[in-house]
Length: 207
Image 1 (cartoon, rainbow, N blue to C red):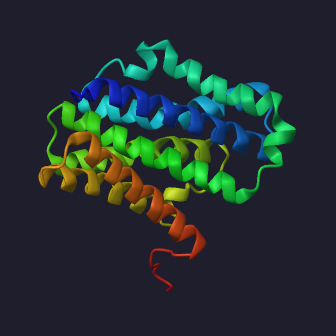
Image 2 (cartoon, rainbow, N blue to C red; image 1 turned 180 degrees about the vertical axis):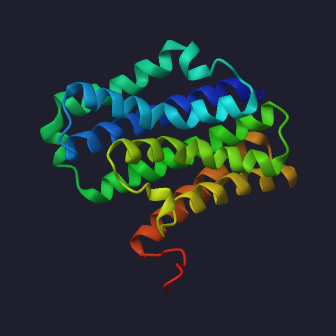
């Protein structure tokens, strides 16, 4: 089967958009926001990282603003949470962590892939993959007047960076692009989950 990077990128992007849309809407409910606030937070969480990435690589206007399917997917996630909020609120926190890790992995891989498509240096592609993964969550936390998770001693951005680096390394070792993307995604996903369950944190100045 011929590898189609464009289709892979689109599928991964949409999957991540749905997951982060659900997460953003869930955070809005926890923050006691109204329906408009829920939709705004879902949109920002799902699409802000990709928009920042596209602006940095010169892909303007950002693809998530040109293609209505991205916004539709983000709002679909918000609608699921709004209309099924009692069910969503009953979901165990461990499941939410897994969904968040999955969204982070999908976006890190998608961001890295798009950066490579735009002929960015591999090191910069890793940074852009990381930004894609954590950008939406950072905007979400700012809108909720919270210190962004990425700035706290938490293995979050580190997991996205590791996944992006793993994808780049896999391609440099000659792995098929799709396989390298899977390797990077699994690395990011696994590292994020293990760090949460084992309470791993990055070092701080006060120890």
